[in-house]
Amino acid sequence: MQFIDLKSQYKRIKDDVDRRVLAVLEHGAYVMGPEISELEQRLADYVGTAHCLSCASGTDALLIPLMAWKIGAGDAVFTTSFTFVATAEVISLTGATPVFCDIDAETFNISPAKLEEAIERVKAEGNLNPKAVMPVDLFGQGAEYDKIEEICKRHGLLLLEDAAQGLGGSVGGKMNGAFGDASGTSFYPAKPLGAYGDAGAAFTNDAELYERMKSIRVHGMGTERYDNVRLGMNGRMDSIQAAVLLAKMEIFDDEMAARDRVAGKYGEVLSDSSVKTPKVLDGYKSAWAQYCVLAETSEHRAKLQAALKAENIPSVIYYPIPLHLQTAYKDLGYVSGNLPVTEDTSKRIFALPFHPYLSDEEIGKVAEVIRGV
Ligand SMILES: *Cc1c(COP(=O)(O)O)cnc(C)c1O
Image 1 (spheres, helix red, strand yellow):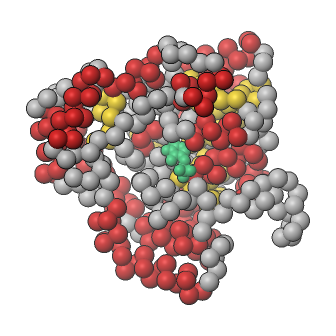
Image 2: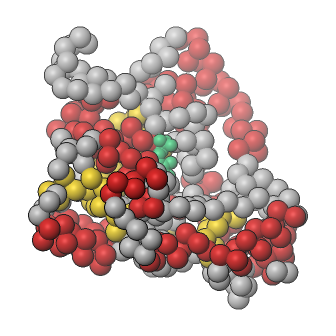
Image 3: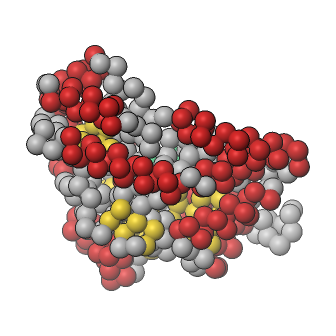
């Protein structure tokens, strides 16, 4: 059994992908070719924002808005520790300090109550200047944006949505990627909408921010090519990746429906089993970037994973070490026990095989092995 099945997907769209990629090879505009603006328009329409800026990766798509806001040394950006390292890494790359908040035990997303506490604490300490909040749409489910937007407004903080895992999901009918002042998503191959290499995109409704981000994407370019008005980077998406993504967008809605079906089936066959299946809040639609279940203890998780492995069923732990306990962040001074829900979750969570082409038989087999432990 495969953890993610990109081969079945390629077989399904091979003709369209091949045709579009070959067209790039023929026209030769490998960088900033016509596929780029076509994709940006398509994605902005899909997410429902005024602007979309295609980027070289999800990491760049999250770094560029922070740079455009001139966030830097002395600033605090509040985020979750239970995420992929890139979320906090981009904060640190600007010179700002990530402030890690604990998560909600059911959704694994940043807890609005813990966020509020952290903001109050940082304000009282007076060492850092609170600037922004960066929630993550973890495993595909949007964060609690109604509460978080209210907190940001009250404290005068910018809101950057890390939608790297969230594209395709929605909250109250509004698509993930459309929340906050800006968002960034990733098209890394294993994400719900994946390219055939690294790629990402930032979204915003703010026309002025969009112009600054666009400049930063190409070395802080001004009105002319060799006029540099600020520091930037080389953060462009390749035309070939845009061509691939245009082909994949043709089947994205259909794949999202298939992901919902697979998640529903898992929920059915694993109900009343020894693992806790993921909870999706009322009014939320998950993009199901991962299907993560909770074991009772870390020993129980080890037994379940060993039993699955014995049947050639892959499973993966997202995330075994929360960011506040990573070696790279030891200078921030966090210790074990600082974020109890995050730490407990990291000891018990693991992801099951999940993709739109997973069959009922395969799902049944996974459940059978889990029930046998
Ligand atoms: C994948 C991911 C990123 C980074 O995206 P890349 O395209 O790999 O740079 C950022 N945040 C989260 C939560 C992710 O899962």
